[in-house]
Length: 388
Image (cartoon, rainbow, N blue to C red):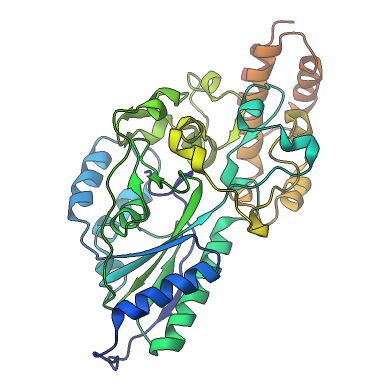
């Protein structure tokens, strides 16, 4: 857990496998190649590129302890892959270096009317739906994976065939630890990677390779005595510095959890219908977060300030059509409705008779019979939150 920045670990696919033929020029200037790779990475839209070795022995013991506590919840894949997660050479034979890259994702508000509607404004407006900022645009898996493949192709053109494999929040990869080792930032107490230049509002991706590139030096941790991210977590999921109990994390509950959301946690979710950014929003380093100029990360369908009632009105065809190409589509329509029902229940509790509470009640009641058993359970819970 905590191996991605600003989001929960996903289960995307890796691409870009080719075989090294053993004919590499041992007299090559690997330092010069590293400089070129950084330049090519910037040309492809990555803000930073770094290089690390594959020694994750320290992280391996920490991962084992985390799994032993059951903090991974239903994220069975975190344990299923065994040592492949902490031993890159077992995941892709021949790997001796990892190229890590980060790309900013923070989208600029669209239009003057929404420029003043920031994340805090949405969180403080019960009738609106809060969606994690990383998911407002196109699915990052496709964007980052494509750019990393292009980078690998550029390296291939320079050095000839080489062994590599491309990842972005996919397969058993310890993204944050590898990025830390490559000097892209340090691990914050919320478990995400932090950068002095960009806070934590960026995606990470990797290329496992057999090229003997020079490794970078990790930078010093700069959180000091600050614990604002821990205090900000709505559900108390950050149980200690650098320790996240996924079972309580709103990102896990709204994205990864397949069944019913525990009833005692539902009131704490508020209007967060896909992910949660509270620990990042509270982090002082995120005042340095950079707005991305990547077109694919621009806000789509007004999701940065959408009304709960409007989203509830979507049928399954609307959901699939409007969110085509979005990471949100991965949770499916049923979990989307489950999350909206919880958010509407919390809105009903907060609004108590004020508009649009009565409209929400009517919408929930009219859709009750057609709802799946799981959605109906959350819908019924939502209606109990309203005192007519």
